Image (cartoon, rainbow, N blue to C red; front, side, top):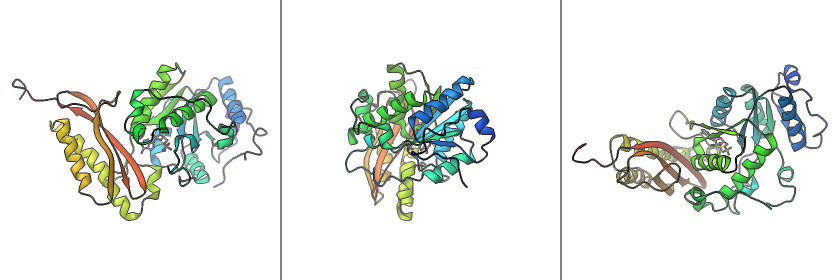
Length: 320
Ligand code: AMP
């Protein structure tokens, strides 16, 4: 299927003056823009018509998990824009920036099937004309643990590009997946702390029928690794079940870890039950809402997963 697209060279000459009438004449798919100037003009035209705008920031290689974000946003706004940008500044040397899947044509075709209005797919040079990050957003304390510890420059890069995308598109609402739970918390904090005029819409994790959390990186798993990777969701769900059954956090965590450690081919980075705002591991004497978070390497592929858990708290004479 062909889609309307402007190449970076054409950009600036094909800005739809009126997105709604452009829509009517455009049964084929979303408008694809590569340039900031196009994006600005497109959004300005929407604003002139009083239409609300939603943004789904992605790195592409889209799957049904990303479509959940689109679907959630379509319930909230008139126009949904999906950005597709593999952001170099959130990858450290040695990370998988070069091997990260890039499938723009297939992504646009997929988005056409769900009625996405526009795609913003800038080049790195368009986003970083200086060729380097001169100014960046530093995450607060929750960004220093777990993903932030293993990948020390990751969140500064991710928050900075999200900030840039929010400034470029100026959406009313932006959707983020609970799949990247620590990122969702940090983005929510950034929006509050910097008074950004946007509402963050959290969207639950979408899983395959066998439980594996959908991820663009799953495409890099061999068949055998895909089977092994299932133990990540099994571990997370086992911890969740333990907590429902009244286990202490340390016991629940031990059950999850032993499931993973029994599997050859899994190298655990962390499995922890944390307080969901601060990311401080929960002690055995607390009760309430928490999050089990997990990162592990399966072969060359690093995967993450998480789930909400409710800690019953230690049993006492009265409630035993
Ligand atoms: P990515 O392209 O991996 O950077 O993800 C873009 C957005 O989609 C992020 O907000 C992710 O949290 C979200 N996302 C990715 N996979 C899933 C999933 N399986 N379920 C829900 N959201 C997801």
